[in-house]
Figure 1 (spheres, helix red, strand yellow):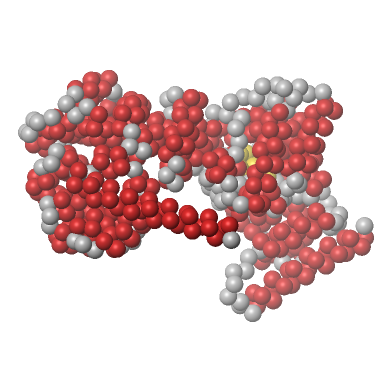
Figure 2 (cartoon, rainbow, N blue to C red):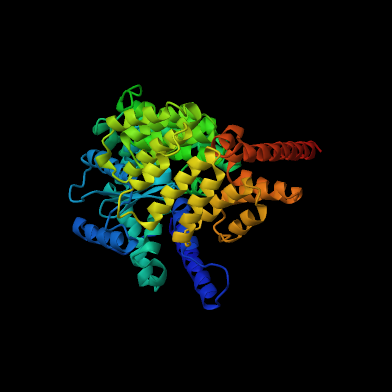
Length: 578
């Protein structure tokens, strides 16, 4: 043991010395404490822990150290932004408090934090009972019992003194003059993210499961989670998998880092099964639904929508709604992806439910657009009926949009004065952005009704009043290209800043280039638009949003893009077979 301890100390000092020399020579590569942190963690896994000439700290000293770490790491003040983040944090606190009630060291008070980053696939415990869980790890969970197992594992690292002993490495390194790398703060906290030795990790699994079961959770939660980790561990070591992408939008590097800092999931699962048998726990006990699972299903659905997997996205939103019928975000997302998939009827159904739960401008707008396709003549009556049902006081900003969609549907139905009447009744005190948005929406209804000259006047009025709002230039370009004024349309597009890239602008450029005979340029512009937003490859979506003339041009470009992709696929398959 003595020889192994000396070896571990030599490795640690050598790594620190190398980092010191690199910093002194000011190399251009990024130099961070991470290699040293993993050196510490890896050394623990290969040798006995380096003995420390430090006495065991008291619970009070540990609590004080934990508070300092939490402050330096930026966990306080703990004020997550967004309703979903608040819900997740409240769930962490509820389940965590329930599990932590069973710890042995009662002088440690537990606190739970959300690192609201889908790319952070990890959880770690700081001394003093501060438990941090990443959103990326939470996205992998499917039951409250699995969450209890995760939190029990981290709580065990504190209760069994693994966390405070890890801090003693930091304190010892400061005595060696390495405080620059192990100062209390972000770098110090990374020590706790690097994982523990194999025995400590397996002990945390076992004791943490004990805490979870004592809190009333099924022991099966920990096993099912390890089984999922075992599959993900295998897939992440090979190549990106669609199965993983459907489960959560998680970078594979983050998954690999998590698995690197823990024993193999298969070994952890086997140890947990043995513990369940030894303790006589019921492995068939039903697991509890995870209330925040709906949030992560919606996250995954959004990612699938962006990639053009509209069917998969719809399935995820529907699964979320099966768990929580009143989850407004899922109804909104389902309405959007249904529209982008070209299904106007499904959009009406989902957008109606979204309006009932969140009568926001975007929901009223999408519902109006879908009704214009499904029932342009009876749509206004349907919206009036819904307006009587919905209490708009919860979102007064949606009121003008509700009235505008009714007026727009009436305009489509032949009542030409409907939009003028709406304009006359606009409330005072609207901001420039709000006015322009409403004018753009009025112009959309004119454009869809084939009143291109009227739409141009409406948009030009908005542009003259608020020239700094460049969205109007793009809308004008779409109208002008249909009017046959290609040079004017291109001028409008050129007034828009090139960054960030507007996908709709790329598509507008493609249409203008096609109409002016620049076919190769048009193909390239459309390819970029379709790659950045797969909805441009959906004929019904184009038809539902743009004029028949634009839809005709885009249809030709879609056919060319499909042929290009098929040829590219065939070439890849041929090369793969060589």
